Length: 66
Ligand SMILES: [Zn+2]
Image (cartoon, rainbow, N blue to C red; front, side, top):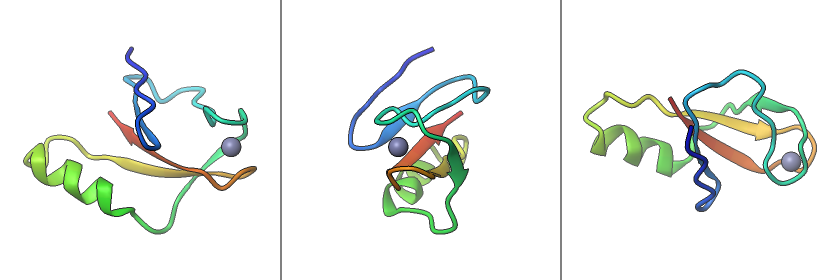
């Protein structure tokens, strides 16, 4: 498991129990995908499917790579 806190990007192998790294709040799936998620998908040739979450509490957006 690697946790990379680089401009709101999280690299984590297990999705279970993921929480906001800033405030520990619940993460909900974001409706809008940020540009970085599209970039990750492109550079990984579609093998990586980034999921975007938003913190219920502080509205911080998280890109999760699985
Ligand atoms: Zn938060």
